[in-house]
Length: 189
Image (cartoon, one colour):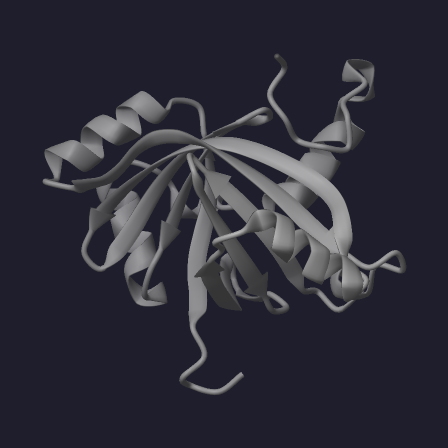
C-alpha cells in the first residue's frame, strides 16, 4: 500500500446508549452530516473464499437509492485502532455490476444491516450505529485524535473492539446459540 492509497483509520466502540453520545457530540458543536438511515451491505466473494482468505472485503452498500462498491484491503491494528486500504465508488447500474462480479467469480455471501447516523468533529468522523447486536460508535480519522475525541464525547476508547461487524456478528451468534440467529446480520421484520 503506497502513501497515495486511501486508508481508513478507526476505532469501533460498543455503547449502551446512542442518545447520550449524540447529545455530547451536539454539545461539542459537532456537525450532523447524515441523519440516521438504514444501510444494507452485501459482501461478495468467490466460492473458495479467496477474498476473505486474503483479508480483503468486496462490499456493495445501499443507502437509500445510492449504491457504493467498496474494496478493503487486509486490516492491521495498532492497539485497537484499525488501519486498512479502502477504495470506493458509486455504482450506476447494480444489475450490470452484479453481472460483472459474477463473471469474475464473485457472488453474494453475506448481508448485514445497520442504521447509521454520521457526525463530524474535525478531523474525526463519528458514526452512531444501531445494529441487530447492539449499538456502536465508530470514530474515523487521524489515529492520534481518536482517543481524545472518544473522551470528549464520553466514551472509553479502551473499550474499543477489534474486528468488523461481520466478525463481531459471528462471535455474537456463537455466544447466543439459543437465539438461532441467521448468518446474515439483519433486523427482524
